[in-house]
Image (cartoon, rainbow, N blue to C red; front, side):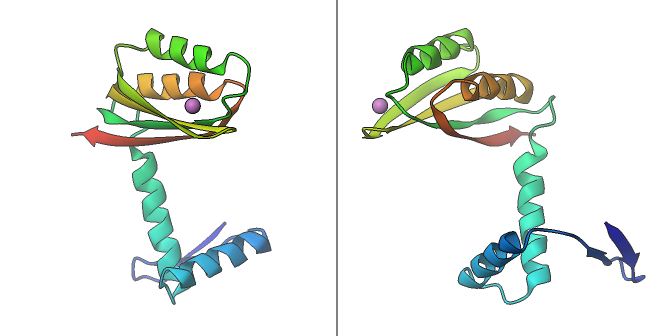
Length: 141
Ligand code: NI
Protein backbone atom coordinates (compact mmCIF):
# COMPACT_ATOMS: atom_id res chain seq x y z
CA UNK A 1 0.00 0.00 0.00
CA UNK A 2 1.36 3.43 -0.93
CA UNK A 3 0.68 6.43 1.24
CA UNK A 4 1.04 9.99 0.02
CA UNK A 5 0.43 12.74 2.56
CA UNK A 6 -0.77 15.97 1.01
CA UNK A 7 0.06 18.07 4.05
CA UNK A 8 -3.61 18.43 4.95
CA UNK A 9 -3.90 15.41 7.26
CA UNK A 10 -5.46 13.45 4.43
CA UNK A 11 -3.54 10.62 2.83
CA UNK A 12 -4.01 9.22 -0.63
CA UNK A 13 -3.56 5.45 -0.90
CA UNK A 14 -3.71 2.96 -3.72
CA UNK A 15 -4.90 -0.55 -3.00
CA UNK A 16 -5.40 -3.74 -5.01
CA UNK A 17 -8.70 -5.61 -4.86
CA UNK A 18 -10.72 -8.06 -6.96
CA UNK A 19 -12.85 -6.25 -9.55
CA UNK A 20 -16.05 -8.05 -8.49
CA UNK A 21 -15.54 -6.78 -4.93
CA UNK A 22 -15.23 -3.21 -6.23
CA UNK A 23 -18.34 -3.69 -8.41
CA UNK A 24 -20.33 -4.96 -5.44
CA UNK A 25 -19.08 -2.11 -3.25
CA UNK A 26 -20.03 0.53 -5.82
CA UNK A 27 -23.46 -0.99 -6.41
CA UNK A 28 -24.14 -1.06 -2.68
CA UNK A 29 -22.85 2.47 -2.00
CA UNK A 30 -25.05 3.88 -4.78
CA UNK A 31 -28.09 1.95 -3.55
CA UNK A 32 -27.72 3.42 -0.06
CA UNK A 33 -27.12 6.94 -1.36
CA UNK A 34 -23.35 7.50 -1.59
CA UNK A 35 -22.07 9.29 -4.69
CA UNK A 36 -18.49 9.77 -3.47
CA UNK A 37 -16.44 6.57 -3.35
CA UNK A 38 -13.88 8.02 -0.89
CA UNK A 39 -16.67 8.98 1.53
CA UNK A 40 -18.21 5.50 1.26
CA UNK A 41 -14.86 3.83 1.95
CA UNK A 42 -14.29 6.11 4.96
CA UNK A 43 -17.72 5.13 6.33
CA UNK A 44 -16.98 1.44 5.80
CA UNK A 45 -13.60 1.77 7.53
CA UNK A 46 -15.16 3.53 10.54
CA UNK A 47 -17.75 0.74 10.83
CA UNK A 48 -14.96 -1.86 10.64
CA UNK A 49 -13.03 -0.16 13.45
CA UNK A 50 -16.07 0.25 15.68
CA UNK A 51 -17.24 -3.32 15.10
CA UNK A 52 -13.88 -4.73 16.09
CA UNK A 53 -12.83 -2.32 18.82
CA UNK A 54 -14.43 -4.43 21.54
CA UNK A 55 -12.17 -7.39 20.81
CA UNK A 56 -9.48 -5.87 23.05
CA UNK A 57 -9.34 -8.71 25.54
CA UNK A 58 -9.79 -6.54 28.62
CA UNK A 59 -13.11 -5.06 27.41
CA UNK A 60 -16.14 -5.75 29.56
CA UNK A 61 -19.68 -5.60 28.32
CA UNK A 62 -22.71 -7.43 27.09
CA UNK A 63 -23.82 -8.66 23.73
CA UNK A 64 -25.49 -11.14 21.45
CA UNK A 65 -24.11 -14.17 19.68
CA UNK A 66 -26.27 -15.09 16.68
CA UNK A 67 -25.91 -18.60 15.32
CA UNK A 68 -27.48 -19.91 12.15
CA UNK A 69 -27.26 -23.67 11.80
CA UNK A 70 -28.72 -26.74 10.20
CA UNK A 71 -30.76 -28.69 12.80
CA UNK A 72 -30.42 -31.87 10.72
CA UNK A 73 -26.73 -32.05 11.61
CA UNK A 74 -26.19 -34.93 14.03
CA UNK A 75 -25.89 -33.92 17.70
CA UNK A 76 -25.66 -30.21 16.98
CA UNK A 77 -28.33 -29.09 19.44
CA UNK A 78 -26.78 -31.15 22.22
CA UNK A 79 -23.29 -29.82 21.45
CA UNK A 80 -24.47 -26.20 21.45
CA UNK A 81 -26.31 -26.69 24.75
CA UNK A 82 -23.33 -28.33 26.46
CA UNK A 83 -21.00 -25.51 25.40
CA UNK A 84 -23.44 -22.93 26.77
CA UNK A 85 -23.55 -24.82 30.08
CA UNK A 86 -19.76 -24.67 30.28
CA UNK A 87 -19.97 -20.91 29.87
CA UNK A 88 -22.88 -20.31 32.23
CA UNK A 89 -20.86 -17.58 33.96
CA UNK A 90 -21.31 -15.40 30.84
CA UNK A 91 -24.44 -16.84 29.16
CA UNK A 92 -27.47 -14.92 30.40
CA UNK A 93 -30.16 -16.49 28.23
CA UNK A 94 -30.84 -17.79 24.75
CA UNK A 95 -33.70 -17.79 22.29
CA UNK A 96 -34.23 -20.32 19.57
CA UNK A 97 -36.24 -19.82 16.39
CA UNK A 98 -37.01 -22.73 14.02
CA UNK A 99 -36.83 -20.91 10.67
CA UNK A 100 -37.37 -23.83 8.29
CA UNK A 101 -36.37 -27.48 7.96
CA UNK A 102 -32.71 -26.59 7.34
CA UNK A 103 -32.27 -23.47 9.42
CA UNK A 104 -32.37 -22.66 13.10
CA UNK A 105 -31.46 -19.29 14.52
CA UNK A 106 -30.16 -19.23 18.07
CA UNK A 107 -29.52 -15.92 19.80
CA UNK A 108 -27.42 -16.12 22.95
CA UNK A 109 -27.30 -13.12 25.27
CA UNK A 110 -23.96 -12.82 27.01
CA UNK A 111 -22.39 -10.64 29.63
CA UNK A 112 -18.75 -10.59 30.69
CA UNK A 113 -15.31 -9.94 29.31
CA UNK A 114 -14.45 -9.97 25.64
CA UNK A 115 -11.88 -12.72 26.08
CA UNK A 116 -14.46 -15.23 27.39
CA UNK A 117 -17.08 -14.21 24.85
CA UNK A 118 -14.62 -14.69 22.00
CA UNK A 119 -13.66 -18.11 23.36
CA UNK A 120 -17.34 -19.12 23.63
CA UNK A 121 -18.02 -17.92 20.08
CA UNK A 122 -15.02 -19.85 18.78
CA UNK A 123 -16.20 -23.06 20.44
CA UNK A 124 -19.73 -22.65 19.09
CA UNK A 125 -18.44 -21.87 15.59
CA UNK A 126 -16.28 -25.00 15.58
CA UNK A 127 -19.31 -27.31 15.35
CA UNK A 128 -20.31 -29.01 12.14
CA UNK A 129 -23.60 -27.61 10.83
CA UNK A 130 -22.94 -23.99 11.80
CA UNK A 131 -23.63 -21.80 8.78
CA UNK A 132 -23.03 -18.37 10.23
CA UNK A 133 -22.06 -16.77 13.50
CA UNK A 134 -22.19 -13.10 14.35
CA UNK A 135 -21.31 -11.25 17.53
CA UNK A 136 -22.75 -7.90 18.54
CA UNK A 137 -21.01 -6.51 21.59
CA UNK A 138 -21.74 -3.43 23.66
CA UNK A 139 -18.66 -2.29 25.48
CA UNK A 140 -19.03 -1.00 29.03
CA UNK A 141 -16.62 1.89 29.54
NI1 NI B 1 -34.82 -25.17 15.64
